[in-house]
Length: 280
Figure 1 (cartoon, rainbow, N blue to C red):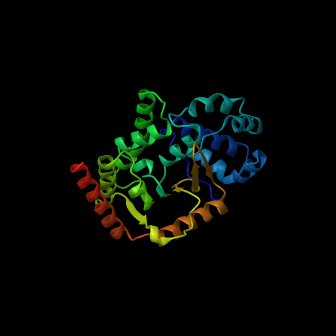
Figure 2: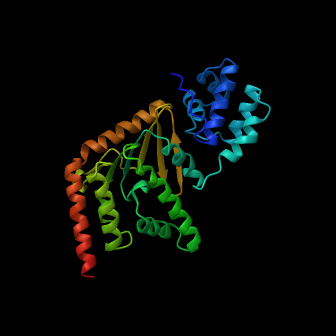
Figure 3: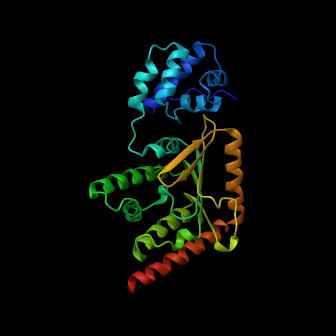
């Protein structure tokens, strides 16, 4: 595997630790693949830790210190660097998302988190945690909106989402919330900030019937796939597995409406929700 360019250590504590990992590995004369073999992980995984797109887990940190002779450096420093405002099962994905060059996502039931409005996100979190305090829900919504600020940059990351048609009709929060939420998605698409497609019900069986998939590519690290379930999720870096998920996404996109047709459908549904809200 090609070596990644040296990351910018000023970006985050994780980037600084990643740069130290690269330095320690090179000092030992090990390639990413060779170090990965000693730790029973892939060379890609080593590259992602060095690039700061994946956290160094405590058990890996201890092994790195032993193999690289770094006198406990990684064990001491990785715990603080791994603190996150996101749930454990999603923290790595959110952190990778923040430095991705491109994100492609298929969501069959919900508007993706990066595209959610405050009211829509609040309804989703309240449904997941019906007995949580208002403060807990407020914190979850704030974290989700912080993720969405990635789109404040006019060009990066490239974001391409395919929505299952059920997303348009799953009434999260009622007509007013849905009109605002889908209107926000349509606005981003109309301004060419995101690419949006809708996979219609009439497409029938498709390549991702078993759930959502998120793909992330990077300038200085191998691509990742993130697969999410209820309260769980995992990042995959195995090249064959990631390639399979990329093919799945491509097949879903091929079965979906074109971006132009998708935008027309979304805006039509927004009009229906807005009309309903006005007469409710």
